[in-house]
Image (cartoon, rainbow, N blue to C red):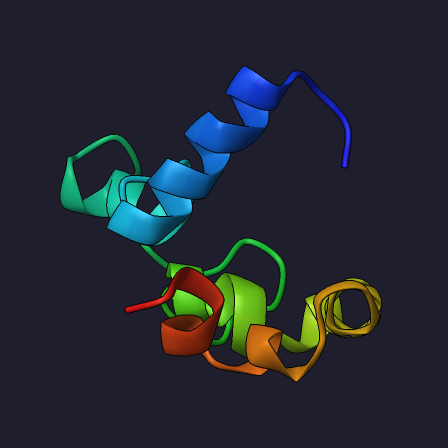
Length: 81
């Protein structure tokens, strides 16, 4: 994972709260015309979609699962909710 610890922490907080640069949130705050995923164009681009479901991120997701284990397959486990 690149970037400074501060940047990494900021991104983690954004993912945890849902206040992200993903289309789902940006559409909700009227910064994007659509909340649909820009990669797969099949679903609303939410944190769950981005990290767990989007088929276009399958390879990157597999790498994440290898790094952090099966807990990454469930947002509640990933973020400790």
